[in-house]
Length: 295
Length: 315
Ligand SMILES: Nc1ncnc2c1ncn2[C@@H]1O[C@H](COP(=O)(O)OP(=O)(O)O)[C@@H](O)[C@H]1O
Ligand SMILES: [Mg+2]
Image 1 (cartoon, rainbow over the protein chains, first blue to last red):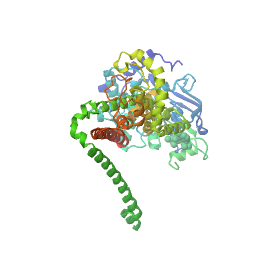
Image 2 (cartoon, protein in one colour; image 1 turned 45 degrees about the horizontal axis):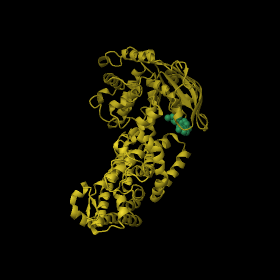
Image 3 (cartoon, helix red, strand yellow; image 1 turned 45 degrees about the vertical axis):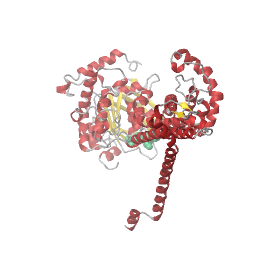
Image 4 (cartoon, each protein chain N blue to C red; image 1 turned 135 degrees about the vertical axis):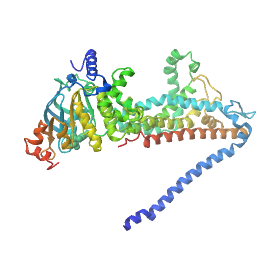
């Protein structure tokens, strides 16, 4: 209740802090003193997720650290997407989607009875595998789409947010002269960065990304990775990736999901610092997977 | 290799099928052409007498053989647009409920109901309108409406079963299945990725629908509206029964009026002069032109939503 029934002052204060955290937007963009305050930790306790009667993951416990990038890897079908979607209550949008266990955001259970999923999703943003900009909106309107859900803002304030978030998503220079064009006029990689900017604009505390670069060319992928490096200064980031090198390069912690026997639900097989997972994993399956022996 | 050559050349069965398809397509065009020609030819007496001025004249003097079409065009447009005004939002509401909220089973049952409604003969709607809907509207809908808006000419005068008011409601009920069914298909075609995108930004379900789904489906829904409008403009029997067939420009919805289709149906059998018959046929020609314009623009709109730039996301 404390968090989700958050007072307006606190929200405004945090937004003000956030803005101060990016002083003189135009010159120093994003390379700023970490505005740590908003990044939150998430703690997952004994989480199982179902689709109707089908149990997709079981007994997952994980500590997601603030201002770190946590990568989730594992063979396909072992529940990475399902898991990441439980972190902002998008899982329950799927038919029959429900969970057991607890997910804490800054100490509060996001599945508590009096918690509105809408508020959870404002605090825990999500970027999807396939870029999904709103085709009827301009690039500018795409970025502010989430902001317009909360309260009216001055045009100048919106302009500022649009520029800042597009810079954070490494897209500003490519679109600054065509902000009023449709979001679908962009390439796939640009669209995905637009979706990142759109997510950043609502100022979440945690950002979830489900294979954000899987459909993109190497250059776009590189740009997104670069952007993520800067994002973690302000946000807690969780990313699903099927790309080992990517996980090793960008993440601080890595979780390996695995299904031992066909038909079982997915489990979090191993979770540790990324260096450890990739150099000296604790379990054989993890090692086989990260060295590419199966997958 | 032979196989591919064969495929490229096409086998005889394909050729026959293609030939037949083209033949039928052409014969449809031919028949439509014939209809238009017949309307054109049979109305030459009236066209020669009144020229283009028939479109803005309201004359109505059968014994003196003087006719104008404006009041009927007016009646058609007012009732059709009024019906759309009523059925449009309700139809979208039903479609939204079916796609976004209702469980599969409900969706299927409502689908059957909607199809049944569309299959009810128009005479039945007409009779029902007089005996059931008209009295109901006059005792429960008109009084509160007049209490608030009675000062408007549009809602003045006593309520009657036989009136533009009842006719508009009946038309609305008749086109509702069309609006709801097409809107449902269009809304269902909106990718779930769009819904998820909006939800993940912290939207409520309503915000998701109004800000992501509706804009995406907008042109398709406009297409559905246009198709419904075309249907409403051409509806004949129900209106011929209810609207009163009074050939004038009505100012109150509780007045009687006439549409092009209703006046043709009401007068054709006993039109007393060659000029009268010719004029009624010319009305048919005008109606044909109007519905054609509405339908073609509807098709174009539906096409653009299906294949246009908003239909897919460039990768
Ligand atoms: N909407 C859904 N309904 C039913 N089962 C699903 C749904 N989405 C995923 N699943 C099932 O849940 C399991 C985990 O899937 P997913 O989380 O997508 O795995 P990953 O992202 O690791 O490839 C799979 O067996 C998949 O078939
Ligand atoms: Mg997945």
